[in-house]
Every structure is written in structure tokens, then in C-alpha cells.
Length: 219
Image 1 (cartoon, rainbow, N blue to C red):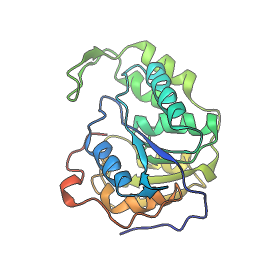
Image 2 (tube, rainbow, N blue to C red):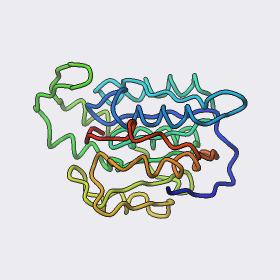
Image 3 (cartoon, one colour):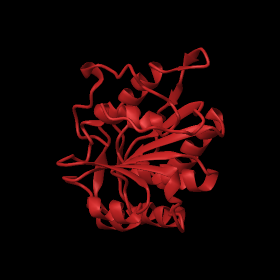
Image 4 (cartoon, one colour):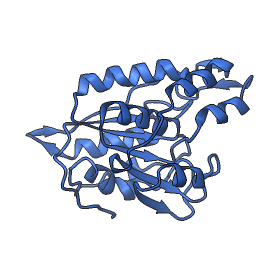
């Protein structure tokens, strides 16, 4: 198992943000909850929230911020794909540590290419169409700059959805773990959980079993 030594004070909670058109019951969301449940923090399991985010970026950000405020100002942000982008927005605004997994870089540009596409969310059953407003909201949310020391970047080198080189460049100077051949869903996240939690000052000895392991490609 991978681990990274951390001298930071332990966080009081973890906020996991799923990717675009994914859900709060995605494999990685379940895995994060299972990992946090195995950490004893002041006599109780480490708090972990994995909210269902709306498909509109501004609404998703507002939902994430509301949940973050409920957890407090000592929280580790973890986000995958578009959730990684939102985690970055929150990390920069509130000066928090964050783990970003195959994060979307310049998502406004990506969404522009999908404009007019009809989408169905497999987790919620919601149907919607990608509109210009998705692009405009992402442009408005994009931070002007990143603070490298806040982040742990997890990148799969064979991401079939995003170009990992863009994230590698955008998060230059961040602590980075590369998974050779890793897919967009980062299906081997279980192996990286000790490093993820160490970025929040916690030691994870009891890694969730293979039953909780990510098996799909949902972000």
C-alpha cells in the first residue's frame, strides 16, 4: 500500500466531490466513506460526506460549499474529474488541503464541445441537455491561480476521457502520484487511500476490503 508521511494536523472531516454526471453512490464515493469509517478521530469515525451534486456547475459549487461549511474549516477536500475542479475552487477560496483525482482542467472548454448533448445520470435517472450556461458557469468559477502546496494530485496515465498531461502541467509543483496505465475512473484508488488520508494528516492502516474496491469507470 502507498503512504505519504504528513506533518499536518489531522483534519476533522473529508468532503468527497464526484465527477460530472456521476453520483454520491459512485464506487469512489463509497470507498472514501468506507476508508474514513476505519479511522478513529477523537473517539469516533472520521466524518466523510459525499453529496449528490447538481449538473449545473454553479449549483454544484454552492451545494459543495454548503456541505463544506457543515463540516467546518478543518476539512480535506477530495474530488474526481469535474469534482476535482470543484475541489480546487473550494481549496483556493478557503485555503484547504485537497486531493484531486484525474481533475478536469479548463472544463469550460471541454463542456463547450459537448453543447447540445443529451445526458442521463445513471445514479439519479435525471435527464438533461448540456447548455451554454454550463460553459459560462465553469468559466466564472475557474480560479485565477493554484497554490501547489495545497494539493495531492493522482493521475492515471491512460485516462481515456481527459489528457493527463494537461493536469500534470496545471498542477505543476504539487505532490503528485502517477499510476501508469491508470484509467479515468482511477480504478485502483483503494491502493492509494493511505496517501489520500495522509494528505489530511491521518494514518490509514485498515484499508477497505476488495468488496469496497472501485470496479467501474464512473468519475
